[in-house]
Image 1 (cartoon, helix red, strand yellow):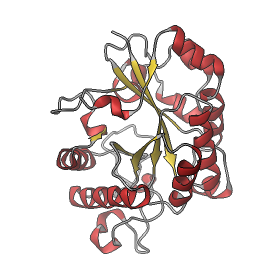
Image 2 (cartoon, one colour):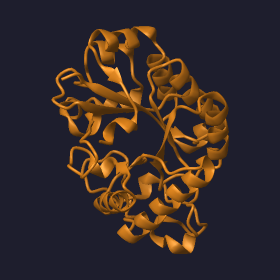
Image 3 (cartoon, helix red, strand yellow):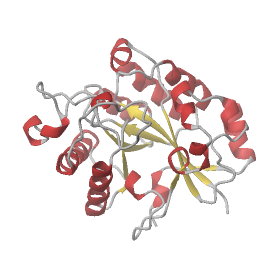
Length: 271
């Protein structure tokens, strides 16, 4: 079985400088899907760049509940927003994992609000791009109510999403998220996201791609440049530059070709 890999550039639309890096990672690197944060102030800038630089690129949805403000009216998603109508940051959330290094608070948004805002961001995505995405996922944190909302929205809309990973759905092929589901997670490969990827992570197969029993595999990265907005609003900063350099390294592409890994986008999941 020839393996396929979807390489996703998360956070497209986070900031203007970051957007330029995502475009570079697609045009010069191995990125196959740009994942748009449609609620962000820099989302229109991201879409403008996409239209002018690479309109053929797959543009999917990076559904975001912890940065900036919702697409929905704040009163329609009260468990997600503070008194100013801004999303609670992920460190304010209550985690379902005791050892979660990020979510240390007591905010636990409801299924209803996740569902409402997911639909609103999909509608904003269509408003910005002219069509719904063929995949959506979540940003930064994940809870059981969010997972159920994603599954229900995905089934209603017929859109593949992270709640469907490795699960059978009519007309949609199973996929495998290497860092979330596979042995790479058990070996600590999630730390790669926190320090930024290196070419050696591919060469030494720290993502466990070569041993994956699945045909369609997914890897997420954060390739981009930095600006003040990003520095002020996320702790993940310099690793983004490292991801950009690695994904544009010609030796990484050669390694994939030598191991007959086919780069695809989310069109590959639809039968």
